[in-house]
Image 1 (cartoon, rainbow, N blue to C red):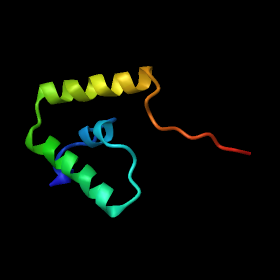
Image 2: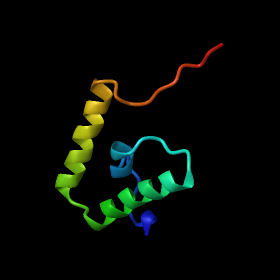
Image 3: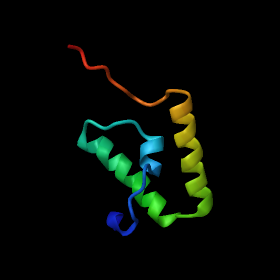
Image 4: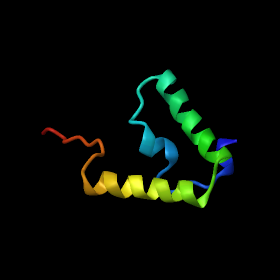
Length: 68
């Protein structure tokens, strides 16, 4: 069911939940993805766009520096 929606640059799970390390966290992100599939709308896409832009502009994303 998750593969019904064409992939984009970001998604509802990516803007609402941080990176995952465990199976339980991956299940939570899957729930976000399934919610998006059920509730797809232009408004929800707009919310994703706004959250993505605010994350980029205010450096809220998670990043790492490579130590050499």
